Image (cartoon, rainbow, N blue to C red; front, side, top):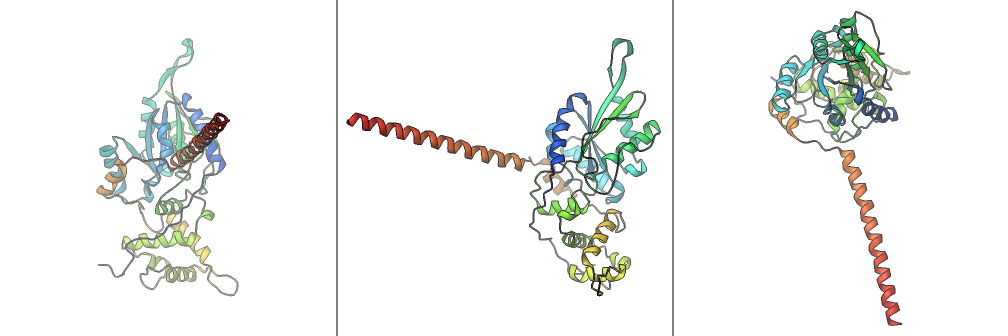
Length: 351
């Protein structure tokens, strides 16, 4: 039973892009370091198993053995792991691993995989098996948390990579971090690299809600409106109990003031601080306080459509258009020069 006449679709058309200089530099450094790497671990967010795919990594990852790891599985819908694992095997021929790096879930399996990839290296007198692994992914998917988890399990040592809820904590390609002694396995942490252009506005909101884009770059009240839309689509009205909301609502202008009142988010003069309330709700979602939600559509037909279509880099497309225009202007100039030369020859002939 649906007691609420909720929206059937979320309408939003603003493009959110975030690709600061350190990401462009990081992508170049990742490419330069490839020769020293045997395996690439690509970390994605289990809450947005499709939207956290950065197709910029495809040409890089195809050159090496790749392991796809979906982190934050504890925050995604419980069905996500089974559905996504099956779909990637069926449509892409790829194996994926789900983990919660903070609890070391499935980390032993990842270490075993990396150990099997070890190859003999070093001088003849001191040959030993080693694996060098590069860890890539979009911002705030938990790359550094995974590295720390691998280190905890593999060599029983503490934190080696800085972590935090703010995207962009790691800003450059780091040195190697040992996570296993025998065979030796070394990891290289890299900065989170955002998709330079997210063409779908709804995907951009999902990426923002999960924390891959800096909050100040997006309209936080719109992000919470999308969160409310998702909760209502799932017919999960637990927010009423959590924040003392009187009844299910699909109106952000009704929802936010009630939550603001409950948490005491007030400005001077008693006015509700809706911006602070939106920030509070975004944080609540990211911490899993609103339940386990996967934002992407993971129905079989939707997964088949997404995973079987070819992706064209919009940046490359724009670059091609630019190149075509330059070539068009060059040919036009040549044509004008030839026409001028022909007119000059005809004029000389008449003389």
